[in-house]
Amino acid sequence: MTGLNDRTATTPCDLKGKRIWVAGHRGMVGSAVVRRLERESPGELLTVASKAVDLRDQQATRAWMADAKPELVIIAAAKVGGILANDRYPADFLYDNLMIEANIIEAAHRTGVEKLILLGSSCIYPKFAEQPIQEAALLTGSLEPTNEWYALAKIAGIKLCQAYRRQHGCDFISAMPTNLYGPYDNYDLQSSHVIPALIRKAHEAKMAKADSMEIWGSGSVLREFLHADDCADAIVTLLKVYSGDEHVNVGTGEDIRIDALAQLVMDVVGFEGSLRKDASKPDGTPRKLLDISRLRSLGWAPSIGLREGLQDAYEWYLANSVEGRGPNDRVAG
Image (cartoon, rainbow, N blue to C red; front, side, top):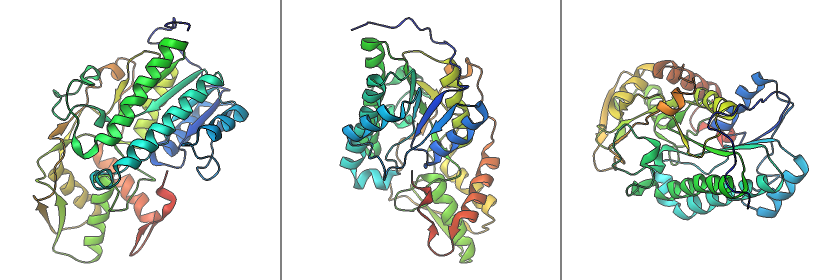
């Protein structure tokens, strides 16, 4: 045991010339991180397909990392999904995410990785946390039941990074993004998050010349949304300058009602019908807005507005979908 390391919360890390592994490079966030890192002149960007290495397999993960020898690691690999998927597959969401992060973090320590950043989610916070949500709100109340399995796995990941920092002096940090969207998102209505679901519903309603489209719940809950490219930029910023023990919120600092979001998506898509609300379906957490003061203090701010980001996401959907059955499996991470 080496005790706490002597890094401060803002120790610089030069990415130039480094061997950087992006775990989960085919997903929405991972692919955005790869695009952003290419501007940093890394020595080599390392990737590995899930078919080649199952990150839930401890031995396979250790063997690959020992051979690849990454100097920096970004954990964007995860099993993700919306309310429906979380409700149907709680064991998968808890087990898969626990195994992925635990195997990578332990192997990173064993192979001497210089710095690691774990990506989590704003769903780690209590359902009724004071708004905007500060990092200190973690573990101060009960979780939203519709995604507690994923949340518990990500909380464990945060604590694992902190534990390896405290016991072994590892420079392992965590970032907790808000709701994300953008290119390579998942548009499967059975497992998608809200924005891709709304884009697909609005597009299909437009193509069918429907009179209306439906959303789940009352539409009154408030959510914050961040484009994946902005998230990637924040991750690179944290990798460069942050070395603190506490996790860091990543968001925009602004939120929107779900029904207003749906209307904005309909406008971007060009669907002129009406909006119907199925109040029998769950709303989830009433409001979830992150306090991003810590990240802003490091010199970062979002640059992509919501309408601009939605337009970008819709253009990607149009370019990567197959009419009548939705986007292909390339969106999977």
